[in-house]
Amino acid sequence: MATSIFYHAGCPVCVSAEQDIVQLIGEEQVEVVHLGTDKGRISEAERAGVESVPALVTPTGNVLHINFGASMADVKG
Amino acid sequence: MATSIFYHAGCPVCVSAEQDIVQLIGEEQVEVVHLGTDKGRISEAERAGVESVPALVTPTGNVLHINFGASMADVKG
Image (tube, rainbow over all chains, first blue to last red):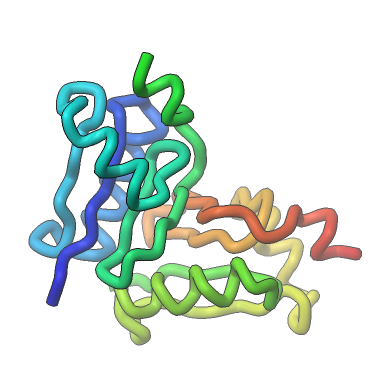
């Protein structure tokens, strides 16, 4: 099965959501990407439709924005 | 394992998120509650901290607001 990608930026809301998502979906099914430290992947996240973090991009390409930590504009700084 | 509860109100955003969540977490791990047709459970959802739908309440009691379909005020109508 293709994995989901969880994009976050290290904010408290992100970390809390990450723990829940990883536990629910299973660690081996989710790639976790920290956009604050891995800025090279910001454009990839935007192309996928991520507008704010934390967000989960599913294997089918849907974007689930989970709670609200920061906008992509904030992430880009 | 305790199950999560996915609250929704039948809106397009809710249905789309439901399909993703059920597929990712597994049907047997999620109870799906339609607050539009099951209004008796609105107060339960509010006590859990649900502010808008769709939302997922995890086994640990955290509330993940996923995208945004409708506020609880809209659900109560």
